[in-house]
Image (tube, rainbow, N blue to C red; front, top):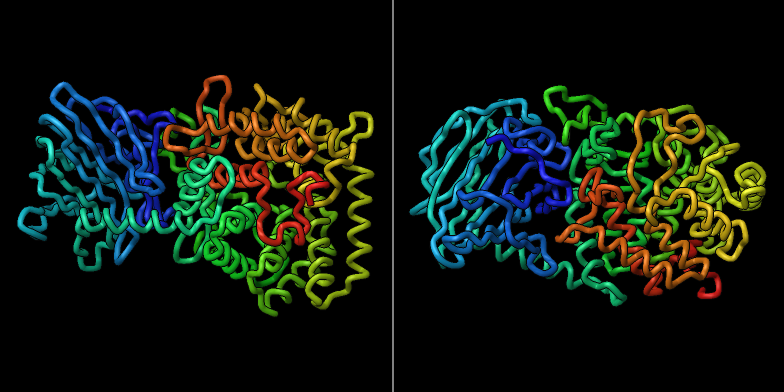
Length: 616
């Protein structure tokens, strides 16, 4: 049987705060990188077929599960099949990591007697390396047997009471499950040159994992509307957190396409600075101060050094080098090639990140997260660079690979960075040439108003002299550049909604506008967070009922497990792009807060304007 990747929305997520697996409705794990999010995948069928690695565990009769769900506010996934012979459940989870990462799958008989089958096709290095599989002869308890797969530095061992066979590099088993039976499978990764770790006890690990997630969610202070979607998005954001450093991966995958069959396929398993302010506000606004603090500390470490060398993204451990290569042996999701590992956009100049870094550190200070004197000196250094380079042409927040432009969002965020430095001096007594900064703030604002606004159309434009629009223009009032009631803001919101809408959802920009501004072939679908920005903007200009209707429609785009990818194709009704997308879930949480009128701690003092002006 040749496996074909399922629809993106057909996958669920399990993870251990250092990596994550995607589990399809058919019981197949088609994506898993070990030991970390950005490590090479050992199951890569998502971007190819069965020869590139998968682990299927389901009734031998095949077919998708009849129902699936997460156990309440946890990352423990349950999938159920109802067959003519009976009902069976597969419980998937990854325990919080001890010495090594484990993927645990427990088969539970619910009724009757069901014949199950499993096929484990480990293929290291993104499906390119077939391991040598041996039986170690190690007996972990009275029933468990162990099979080990080794290739170079990588090794994985399987512990299960089920008798397994090895056929053409695939570990297989066929077994019956009666009502009340529970059959565990534990796949444990380790380096081949270290001692094989003892697998976890599946039942004990299940109880501990479930307890961890319940306790974590219980710490949330969110009491607004749409509690269940917000909590699910918070769990998803936590799942994308890299626990050793506090960084948050933009997504768990690489190269899932923005257009099926197209080449806009990027690696999102890294941490972007521009997500910082949105993520920080989402975490602080829902009571997760520890995560916000860890995220802030990661940011301080990542941006340390020469401010001229600030990058738009970093590795989850803070590393700077993320070279982009293609993997020619992988055909890509539904033939959407090339498959890319790494991201060349890391070397782009995107001036907005200086403003976003300064805003994030200011938000943290206003929210009461202690920032030491060294942090202020770093901010001063970032400000010095911004002061001398704010009017450079750049690649913009969407990482266009065409010519550099004077992007309006970049200039607005430069203004934001300067404004936050002024507020820091005024509000916290910090030292700095505040009069000079005030003059610079006025200069940038005047420049944007003179060159980035089209008076004939009553809208700001994507870049100076552009005919196109950009969804990021919706953020102009949010950062306080202009008030919500300003006619130029209202006109921009209405123009963006009118011109970038596809069936009511927003594109980032028109890829064909201005002689293909991004320098790439093909197109893309509506961008989920942009539609959440529209929710916030409609609310901000007083159209609260319309904003609520759009928000509830966006909730319907989630899959049955509450997960969102990067984009949504309104024509096919499918999710597209990498999944789950942290930015999409941050947008959901922040829009729910805004509609529920729950400001994040310190947001108003920091200059973030999420409510209509009269509400502050």
